[in-house]
Image (cartoon, rainbow, N blue to C red; front, side, top):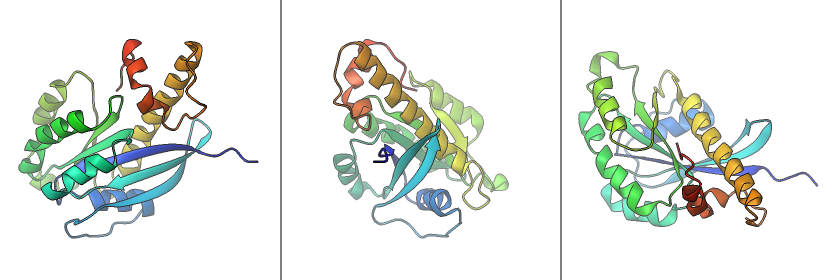
Amino acid sequence: MKPQPKKVKLLILGETSVGKTALLNRFAQNEFVPTSSSTGMDYTIKMIEIDNKKIQLSVWDTAGQERYRSITFNLYKDSQGILLVFDLTNAKTFQTLEKWMNLIKENINDGFQIALIGTKCDLTDQIVVDREMINTFLDKYDFQFEYFETSSLTNINVQESFIHLATKVFRANELLYQTLIAQGIDPGGNTDSVFIQGSNHKKKNKESCC
């Protein structure tokens, strides 16, 4: 019997019209699909390889509208990685990142990995969010984000951002699994969810989450 692939689950968060759906379409289908504002939730499953192991990566694309946020956090608390997305050409979408971070900290389990994604980097003459603003935001938090500037239209850093975050989640899962085993704690042989379930052990060991 072939071993089942490991599973990693990512969640895309951000305001309406920042390009979340276009980002997911470029990653999943390697094509640019112009889309209108998202009014619901969608997901994709893609097989990737990390450290010579097959990984089933599921990515959930959430609607940015306020009315969907409670649904988002109630349904997807088991997400292990978050792509927090803003539009480099729209300062308002950057300013709301603080609100998103508060929602994340209040509703999603400890131990998650996170990547900050600035979209539409190809529109160089329209960019209004500069690197100094971004660095100030990153420096505010105890743990360090990974930051990627992306373009779904010209396919800049899209694959790289998803794979990088999935790799961090997978390796953190594997490390925590081995740590729990070494401590005599039985995680039940399931490395898919041990990262979230074992987050309290992770804190005790003072492992950095990002």
